[in-house]
Structure formats: C-alpha cells, structure tokens
Length: 116
Image 1 (cartoon, rainbow, N blue to C red):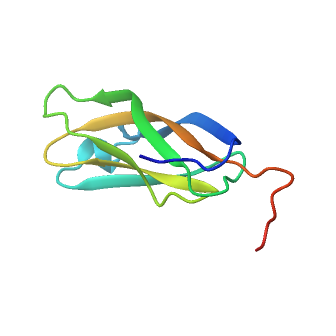
Image 2: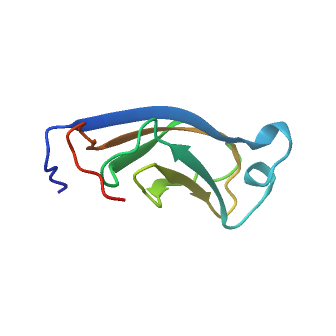
C-alpha cells in the first residue's frame, strides 16, 4: 500500500494511441514472436515523489485469426512522467491499441522547501 504524507494529492490522467500498425503493415500486425512498444507520458505537473500509475487498455483491435495476447504496464515511473509498455507474443496480430492512464501522487505546496 502506498501511504501519502501530505494533504496535497494530485491526479493526472489521459489516453494515448500507442500504435496503429494495420494502416502500414507494421510489426505488431504482421510480425510473430515477442514484440513490444514503449511510449513516454509527460505529466502536466511534476509530482513531489514518483506517483502511483494505473494503465489499462481503452481500445484494442486484434485479429480473430490468432490468439489474443497482451500485456500493458507502466514502467520507469518518475516524478515528471513514465513509460507505457505494451507487449504481445506468439502468433497474435494486433492492429491498434489505445491506453488510458492515471497517476496519483503527492504535489508540491507553495510553502514546501525545495532543495535541488
């Protein structure tokens, strides 16, 4: 469990299309075996400490001719942003993916001391 130590809690959220490979016969759509894509999200405002980040698929378009395999997660979580990583493997054919993300964490207060 993450316990916050101040009353200034911020929530930032958004959505992003990670890829749309069916339009140009990209690797997620035509490839096989392990494949991944990583995209960086910049938070609108830096948090005091690295926030808790939740990521979910908000749209996925997969071939019905193969198994549907997907793994999506936040990685490299920092105060200013994080990477969102999507992975698939085997014979899965992924045409496109959109993800939704939410970051929750402590914010700076005007009276906070900042020592950089």
